[in-house]
Length: 322
Image 1 (cartoon, helix red, strand yellow):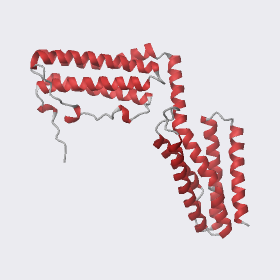
Image 2 (cartoon, one colour):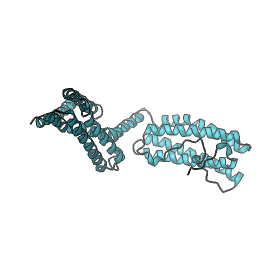
Image 3 (cartoon, rainbow, N blue to C red):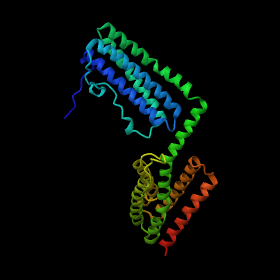
Image 4 (tube, rainbow, N blue to C red):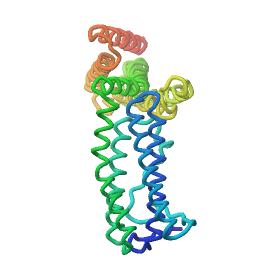
């Protein structure tokens, strides 16, 4: 059953004021949620959102006072999702862990949307006091970008902004790079032995392809579940376990599939040469990620990854030729 929605031009002045009160209350709670969610890792930016939440509270009080004077105590429940044209905002609790840049972008979108709403509402109002208040609020919203810039300057000086960027980088490494790298290493290295053992034991590309796909998918499922159940992120800050598990499982599968797909080629020798080249590319990528994000010296990263990969690769060939 489709949910009934109203057009904005169908709302009465009483309903517009009720909607404005609800919007200010919701926006204030979103900013407060941003402040709470960012406080641990980004305290300076959290203070910005706390001040914005307080300002939304002031707007709500002004709207409530005018509503009581015009229409009494009862305020009908009218939400922005009941009116066409508003942008749907994801609840903050559904998008954690919070990304500092994403929260700032959402705040800008909210302010632009609210400003547009107040200007349209003021243009439709025939009551002088309502029109004046809505117009004043539209002007206030138009200044919020400047207010945000001022708050950033006051609360996030250059050294603090640099520290917040470094914190954000560490969070990205913990939540994305580490599980992805673990999966890529496992998928690229652990599947070498079964794939090339099958290839050299049978001399047929099709057999190597079947073994490689089975090993890659099996390893992806295993690594994904292992990562997901190993840490719920509550103490380590590594984020949602099912997201980490998905990243780890996907990268594990891709790591194995990379040197398995060349065996789609009908020529066994050609497929083997291409597969070996794919292995070299995979190990080079792993070394690069370890150097870029894990602060491992390039030479050490190449030696560690290359030596381990060479051992597994040699094991596969030795078993396949036995």
